[in-house]
Length: 260
Image (cartoon, rainbow, N blue to C red; front, side, top):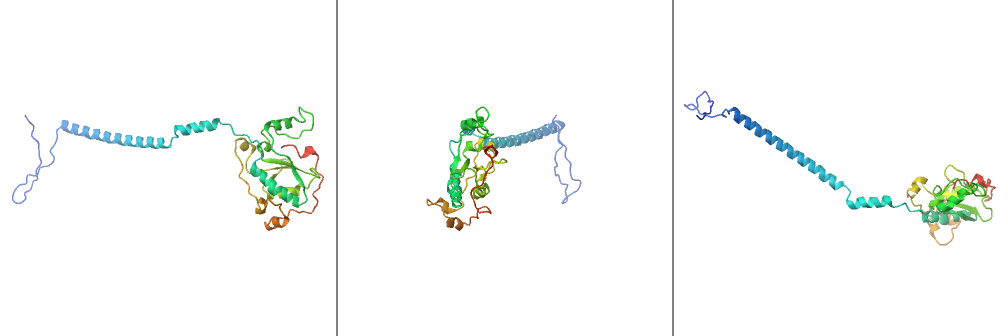
């Protein structure tokens, strides 16, 4: 026999008659269980949908940020390509020497020339063996790849008249004005001038290069020889000191030419 639904009725009258307003029927235990199961199933479905959307968004974001096959191949090629080894004195550094340092030095009575510039790794190794496996005095502690000369960023200077017996304090001031560094860091190397900025020898080996230098005076880029009036017009400092002579007796060779 079909079970009748039970209803509650309001226990008061409205308008002279008893209202017959139905409320939510009481369900059987089986129907309650099925309804609860349906709610749980819907909740799981909604949660699963949210998870799928979240994971899909993360995957798309990661995919968009992932390197392409071409980018991965380019990185591998770059890693496999050896760092180019310089074969000559670096152009920007050489310009600072020839258009700034040497012309100013000439105005102060020097007649300088570059006695050593770029050296290959093999030439550096040969120089290193001097005084060791080859007869002669030791003139360097740097093997091939350990000298700034090997990267085209260093020179050694001498004077046509006085050799290396020069006022190196005055020349150091001129070099600093032109952006050059005097001597190899931490070593007394008087004829040696270089420019590597804030880099180390390991940085140079890794293929890094210092920031380009600029000429401190526009007149230095002209084809005509630099004059003292042009230098003064650029507000260059005076490089004179108490010793007006360019000639000073320098220490013995092995006291200054030991690390480049």
